[in-house]
Image 1 (cartoon, rainbow, N blue to C red):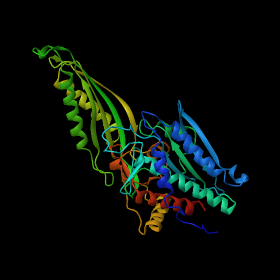
Image 2: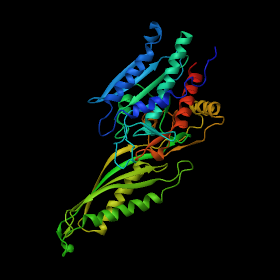
Image 3: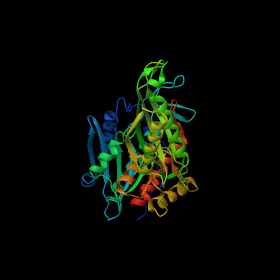
Image 4: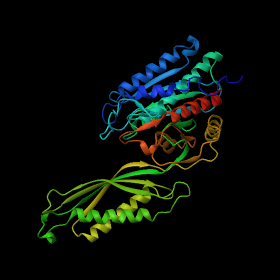
Length: 405
């Protein structure tokens, strides 16, 4: 039996739904995900209820409380064959609303100007969530039309805390909601590309302790900030010297936050810096730890009396492309059918929930594809273009229908 509709009969449903989702504050930290999770759950339940009762009872909607008032949500249509389930992975939280929005642009307004929908999360990733919801709904409609379940199962996993510590996806993994064998696609903003690999993400908290003294007699103290400067310079040079990966490029380091000292006329006895490393093979957390330890030794030698220590606060491995991924082949084909030519395949510069899945389970069939541009995420005046949302809705719907039935 053939699928009757490869694309969407209502091309703007995800566009309208995106505006509704943007108007729900799910900032992290901030309002968090309680209200948006309730909205998404009700939206799904309404559409499941349209099925004949015997089919509706087979569709499962689960909640998992990850943190107080913050629940993961998963909707699943079971398949009749023993084939890997297709999973659309979407996070419900956004970064903080932030300042600096343009005149008349409310971060919770869902305002449309020049075919662009503005608001916090419009591209990261409420438009991707909306597109996935519509695709899931279309599969439900096809189940009702056929009066039977699909060959391959389809799940929609909506997580919390992606913009912070990614505790939502980790809880979903612990609960067995997704694992090594599923075909997993997150709908992060990818600039119309299919993105297949991720640099690793390792975080350090580095502390330098010194000895306080009067600034007119610095030899009686040990300048913790000077020691930290030595360590920072050592780490930066060492990361720049790491091998370049053919696809993922260079390892990078950002010293994102620093604090130390308390008066300009006092030798500082403490300095702390938070370090974000984006690592490519063969460099990994083990290699980065050696670099940090060497940097501490160099700093202690350069500033006698200073002592360094560190804590690893984040450890996510790099994810390399699987050229034989069946999901990649299916998604390339879907973009070709919908867009007239296959999407470009590239790498994701950030770190997503699917990268966590891949890193923790060894699942090599994890990809990213969604509306909008990562360059607009986390900024004032965040927006998503109308054409991007229509494209993503059509591609995700096509992919779900053609792989599930």
